[in-house]
Length: 138
Image (cartoon, rainbow, N blue to C red; front, side, top):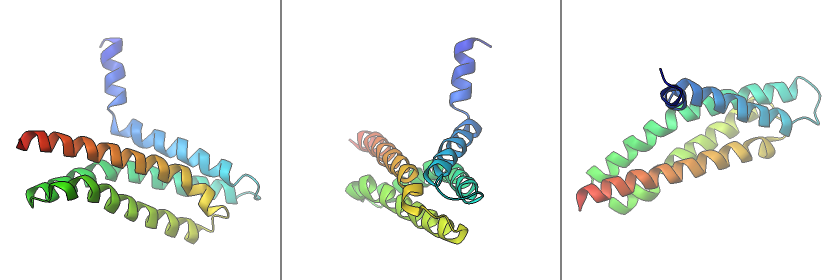
Protein backbone atom coordinates (compact mmCIF):
# COMPACT_ATOMS: atom_id res chain seq x y z
CA UNK A 1 0.00 0.00 0.00
CA UNK A 2 1.43 3.39 -0.99
CA UNK A 3 1.91 6.21 1.47
CA UNK A 4 -0.80 8.27 -0.24
CA UNK A 5 -3.41 5.50 -0.20
CA UNK A 6 -2.62 4.72 3.45
CA UNK A 7 -3.13 8.40 4.32
CA UNK A 8 -6.46 8.47 2.44
CA UNK A 9 -7.57 5.25 4.13
CA UNK A 10 -6.77 6.65 7.57
CA UNK A 11 -8.40 10.02 6.83
CA UNK A 12 -11.59 8.35 5.60
CA UNK A 13 -11.80 6.02 8.58
CA UNK A 14 -14.86 6.52 10.77
CA UNK A 15 -12.87 5.11 13.69
CA UNK A 16 -10.21 7.81 13.23
CA UNK A 17 -12.81 10.58 13.07
CA UNK A 18 -14.63 9.34 16.18
CA UNK A 19 -11.34 8.81 18.04
CA UNK A 20 -10.09 12.27 17.12
CA UNK A 21 -13.37 13.86 18.26
CA UNK A 22 -13.17 11.95 21.55
CA UNK A 23 -9.57 13.01 22.23
CA UNK A 24 -9.81 16.61 21.01
CA UNK A 25 -13.10 17.59 22.60
CA UNK A 26 -12.57 15.47 25.71
CA UNK A 27 -9.25 17.24 26.24
CA UNK A 28 -10.96 20.57 25.76
CA UNK A 29 -13.50 19.71 28.47
CA UNK A 30 -10.72 18.76 30.89
CA UNK A 31 -9.02 22.09 30.13
CA UNK A 32 -12.26 24.08 30.50
CA UNK A 33 -12.81 22.55 33.96
CA UNK A 34 -9.17 22.62 35.12
CA UNK A 35 -9.86 25.06 37.99
CA UNK A 36 -12.04 22.48 39.75
CA UNK A 37 -10.78 19.59 41.88
CA UNK A 38 -10.36 16.14 40.40
CA UNK A 39 -12.26 14.12 39.31
CA UNK A 40 -14.59 16.87 37.97
CA UNK A 41 -12.37 17.83 34.99
CA UNK A 42 -11.80 14.16 34.15
CA UNK A 43 -15.52 13.35 34.28
CA UNK A 44 -16.30 16.36 32.09
CA UNK A 45 -13.64 15.16 29.62
CA UNK A 46 -15.00 11.63 29.49
CA UNK A 47 -18.57 12.86 29.04
CA UNK A 48 -17.62 15.37 26.33
CA UNK A 49 -15.30 12.97 24.55
CA UNK A 50 -17.96 10.29 24.46
CA UNK A 51 -20.62 12.72 23.28
CA UNK A 52 -18.35 14.22 20.62
CA UNK A 53 -17.51 10.78 19.30
CA UNK A 54 -21.19 9.81 19.16
CA UNK A 55 -22.23 13.11 17.58
CA UNK A 56 -19.51 12.72 14.96
CA UNK A 57 -20.76 9.24 14.18
CA UNK A 58 -24.43 10.23 13.86
CA UNK A 59 -24.37 13.78 12.49
CA UNK A 60 -23.28 13.02 8.92
CA UNK A 61 -25.92 10.32 8.42
CA UNK A 62 -28.64 12.45 10.04
CA UNK A 63 -27.85 15.42 7.79
CA UNK A 64 -27.94 13.19 4.72
CA UNK A 65 -31.28 11.64 5.71
CA UNK A 66 -32.92 14.97 6.52
CA UNK A 67 -31.62 16.55 3.34
CA UNK A 68 -33.09 13.70 1.27
CA UNK A 69 -36.37 13.99 3.13
CA UNK A 70 -36.77 17.71 2.44
CA UNK A 71 -35.69 17.41 -1.20
CA UNK A 72 -38.09 14.51 -1.74
CA UNK A 73 -40.89 16.69 -0.38
CA UNK A 74 -39.97 19.52 -2.73
CA UNK A 75 -38.79 21.73 0.13
CA UNK A 76 -35.61 22.92 -1.60
CA UNK A 77 -34.91 25.94 0.63
CA UNK A 78 -35.81 23.99 3.77
CA UNK A 79 -33.28 21.31 2.75
CA UNK A 80 -30.55 23.94 3.12
CA UNK A 81 -31.52 25.38 6.51
CA UNK A 82 -33.51 22.85 8.51
CA UNK A 83 -31.20 19.79 8.57
CA UNK A 84 -28.33 21.57 10.38
CA UNK A 85 -30.75 23.39 12.69
CA UNK A 86 -32.54 20.18 13.64
CA UNK A 87 -29.36 18.14 14.12
CA UNK A 88 -27.57 20.87 16.05
CA UNK A 89 -30.57 21.62 18.27
CA UNK A 90 -30.73 17.97 19.26
CA UNK A 91 -26.96 17.88 19.79
CA UNK A 92 -27.08 20.95 22.01
CA UNK A 93 -29.89 19.49 24.11
CA UNK A 94 -27.96 16.24 24.51
CA UNK A 95 -24.77 18.11 25.48
CA UNK A 96 -26.51 20.27 28.06
CA UNK A 97 -28.50 17.37 29.53
CA UNK A 98 -25.54 15.01 29.78
CA UNK A 99 -23.23 17.58 31.33
CA UNK A 100 -25.89 18.65 33.83
CA UNK A 101 -26.46 15.03 34.77
CA UNK A 102 -22.69 14.54 35.17
CA UNK A 103 -22.36 17.70 37.29
CA UNK A 104 -19.93 19.44 34.93
CA UNK A 105 -19.01 22.67 36.76
CA UNK A 106 -18.13 24.83 33.72
CA UNK A 107 -21.06 23.90 31.49
CA UNK A 108 -20.94 26.78 28.99
CA UNK A 109 -17.15 26.76 28.65
CA UNK A 110 -17.20 22.99 28.22
CA UNK A 111 -19.70 22.87 25.36
CA UNK A 112 -19.00 26.10 23.47
CA UNK A 113 -16.07 24.78 21.43
CA UNK A 114 -17.47 21.32 20.60
CA UNK A 115 -20.85 22.81 19.69
CA UNK A 116 -19.26 25.51 17.53
CA UNK A 117 -17.25 22.92 15.62
CA UNK A 118 -20.30 20.66 15.19
CA UNK A 119 -22.48 23.57 14.06
CA UNK A 120 -19.90 24.76 11.53
CA UNK A 121 -19.49 21.24 10.17
CA UNK A 122 -23.27 20.73 9.96
CA UNK A 123 -23.81 23.98 8.06
CA UNK A 124 -20.99 23.33 5.60
CA UNK A 125 -21.94 19.71 5.01
CA UNK A 126 -25.64 20.59 4.61
CA UNK A 127 -24.69 23.27 2.07
CA UNK A 128 -22.63 20.76 0.09
CA UNK A 129 -25.51 18.26 0.13
CA UNK A 130 -27.96 20.99 -0.90
CA UNK A 131 -25.76 22.28 -3.72
CA UNK A 132 -25.20 18.77 -5.10
CA UNK A 133 -28.91 17.91 -4.97
CA UNK A 134 -29.93 21.27 -6.44
CA UNK A 135 -27.48 20.83 -9.31
CA UNK A 136 -28.89 17.36 -9.97
CA UNK A 137 -32.41 18.79 -10.28
CA UNK A 138 -31.51 21.56 -12.74
